[in-house]
Image (tube, rainbow, N blue to C red):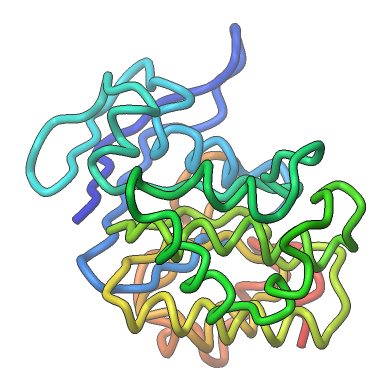
Amino acid sequence: MLELRGIVAGYGGTTVLRGVDLIVPDGAVVALLGANGAGKTTLLRVASGLLHPTEGQMLLDGNDVTRSSPHELVRRGICHVPEGRGVFSSLTVQENLILQSARGEEKEALERAVEAFPRLGERLAQTAGTMSGGEQQMLALARTYVQHPNLVLLDEVSMGLAPKIVDEIFEFLTLLRGQGASLLLVEQYVTRALAVADYVYLLNRGEVAFAGEPSELEGEDVFTQYVGADIGH
């Protein structure tokens, strides 16, 4: 379980997160929603160790990991898929997957990746940077499957993709959850995110404006008030 307590964080002299409390239970999907600039990406950077908070505490399975490095958190089972295709563009698909797999498990990792995204099996020898945006996103997501993470942080993984590819990605997220991973999901398609989420947090100017179950949002004007974007389909 990931728990953030009173997190204050930002860049330089600018504070972005102001006393954020958030919990991702084991095996759960938590949707993190909010308007552009609300602090969603900053929160994921804190959770992955890329940004250390100036105040507050981060706990992972009850252990204080507030000052842990990204590498330490990866070893503890956290996998971060950042916005914007997290792949090595100059390497082939196969080389990308081998780099992300554990030593001695390369063959199994390739098999698992191709099982999750059969299209990657047709592109193993292709340079990742020459693939379509959707295929690159599949490659970025495939590493979350081969690394057997406990917690996956996902930042706008459907952004700019065709609806059919978005469908495939959400099918994959369901598969990933079925393997026992917890998901913290930042997503532009609000209705899609709420459909798979167990819990939802709304960020407004760096503060938690709502925390609860998706069903509690029914009939409330939360999207225009806090999200400020098209809820998508």
